Length: 483
Ligand SMILES: Cc1cc2nc3c(=O)[nH]c(=O)nc-3n(C[C@H](O)[C@H](O)[C@H](O)COP(=O)(O)OP(=O)(O)OC[C@H]3O[C@@H](n4cnc5c(N)ncnc54)[C@H](O)[C@@H]3O)c2cc1C
Image (tube, rainbow, N blue to C red; front, side, top):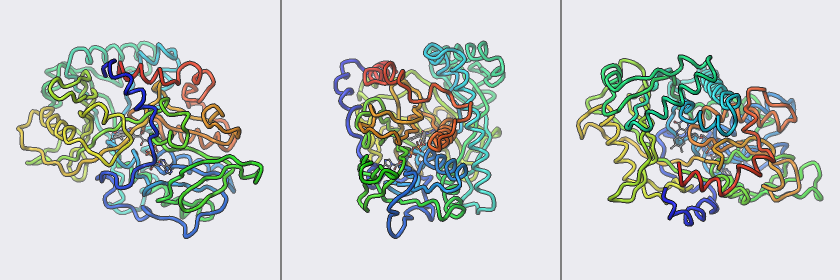
């Protein structure tokens, strides 16, 4: 994005993201809604050990970890809208890592050892996702099937620059971490078309990946946990947290007061699993974390087309501003095919730049929907008119200024309060599913006073060094000016 727009972006990224909006665009994944969708207690509990704000994949992982690793801890989950109605219920369903694309920059910032640890953590998290999705769907009907697949992800590159940079990333990753050899296979233009039916690229890369129906995965799990831990877990949908106050003088055991329109709940500790809306409750984090909105489409091809090799796709291109419209296209399109319906789920963005940095998922840019339709057809070399949009919606991701997730205890500098019982897990900077599940597990263990498992990259922890050196509005602006 242009430097001249810097000042307006500076103020946009520091804006209050607000609460998750009422009446968001309808996500295909959340249709029909789960029976837990609007569930809440007749009356809010008055106290709880741990208040978890947010019922997406991060919140679900923290819930599971706390309940399974402590015999008595009481947990209340606060959800502003219906259960799992944020990014997790609105995403692209891709179980894939963006490793080689980011490896060289990570290595420069963190060293080869940590950059490699992050890749391995991402792969381990995807494995854990598959296990959890399978475990919590056993015995359920097809209507609750999380549709986990194993696929070959075909990444097509539309220009030499992005293709070269990917190949350099793969070479660096493999040279520093020989055990990663064989994950990626580089394809020339001809092989992309002949072997994988992908048109118009200058070359490609394939690697193992998968897909999932994340809303079903999370709601299956929360449903099972409500039954298994009925006396220790409450899920309060349609209960936005409007403020968190620290008041140890009136109750030292439960010093936090969690305010909602339905009343207040006192808590010993508070976990923010609030993704792009975190800045509403923690104003000092605005601009360090900021929202990026994306569009998703579900498209039906007529006549239908099922791939001989189970596949998912990505189109990589240099981000650009359309000279005619001023619309910004962000450099990545990702797609998968539902194994049951055969529908294509394609996501990406091409819209006015100011619409991109937004936490408003009630609005949809027609330009993005059209772009995604055009891109699917041109990727497969199909004629105009073969794609019908079955569904389209938007969702909001959370980015951080150093492009690393934040996991851990929040210091007073960020809460503005003197207590030490506030925790954060989020900011996955794009693909979140290779991160959120085990990051949430790590946070749950930390809340219980336990050490996270050693596979958690220490670079994700909220540290004084990060706060001083890499988490700042300036850094966020640097990223936005040179994505
Ligand atoms: C369009 C789109 C496509 C994506 N595609 C992919 C993909 O294909 N693969 C991938 O790996 N990742 C993808 N992602 C990213 C991924 O979905 C996210 O990183 C991940 O779901 C974040 O999970 P979360 O639980 O942290 O946040 P969320 O799922 O957003 O959950 C946060 C929850 O907190 C609630 N909340 C917020 N504030 C409050 C409050 N004050 N009070 C009460 N509740 C509150 C929200 O309503 C929400 O339900 C995509 C994201 C989007 C938006």
